[in-house]
Length: 435
Image (cartoon, rainbow, N blue to C red; front, side, top):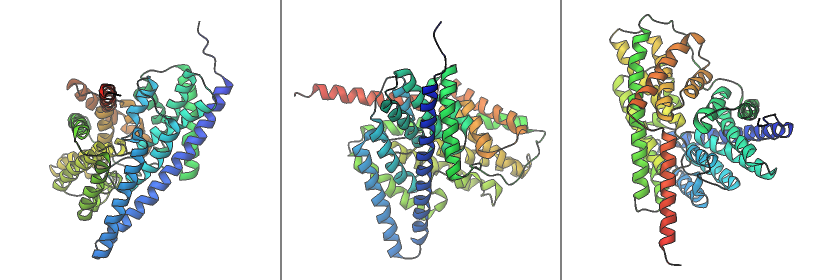
């Protein structure tokens, strides 16, 4: 029988990796928050006079050139980074962990903090994985322990960013390894828990999304959730199609990468000047039902614009993720669905925010194909009470099922296929050139 005893040395390596991951991810998030606040302040001031507008435009261009520089120095930082971790764990890709860590850290801060529709979840996961890779290389770990450290630190990056340790551990099993084992559960769990706790000690321990009201479970909730699951599943399929088509188009465009990196900053700056609600990953849009909720027409506009802004930024190769934007887009969709039902007198207004949360989990499941991670993520981010566990599970399952029936591949697998295809084409072209 194969020896599967837990190693004390490996546990200590995991503890070290978790502590470092928590500190680095906390710093990453703090710097993004500071830059985002500064960017939003410049955006607000740009409406006062032409001088402030020019300053804001130059600031965005500067961030664009800085991001382009980081991409040039290390192309592996492009996108969320999650597909590359998959490729690394399954020996399809390799990367220099230290350089990816450095350039992803600073390039990600510039791209995400600027106000582009990009998320910090994917970059935090990739940054975490590079920490695991660097630690394993420094201590000369064997290949199996190295994989545990890389995957555990990736999940730790997710947990530290969203204050969601259960989601981080679940994502390792569903989104990276596709299986579990006693050693994986123990080693990865140590890293995830310590990374989450370390980040909490720096950032504070509170849910990412704070709800101000509690609603009662209505009698027609089951039927309402069935409709929402269908809609979020279809939206997830559409989302994946747009991102993959956009990625493919970006790769064949005969323009230099630095120009691809600048264009999202220019387009986003112009659009943000006219509508500041579109700033960033969309966290501000999730809480709309709690306050002065917009009308369905404006919600439809927000849904369309966030998808387009995300596609334009992400498909250009920016070092930013799609996890939080896809959650916020799902929240807008749930809000739109709930608002229409409320206008028809079918549900109370207090239920709209919960439908938004259910739609976030369903959207995540349809796009990423990690349903348990989606459920845990929303429960941990909001601290929502257990009576809502069944409806959120129902919506998530139906969304997942719709995407499966329509044969929409998981987004991370599709993006990895594009990376491998592009790499194969590059190597073939290189070999075809006479030396």
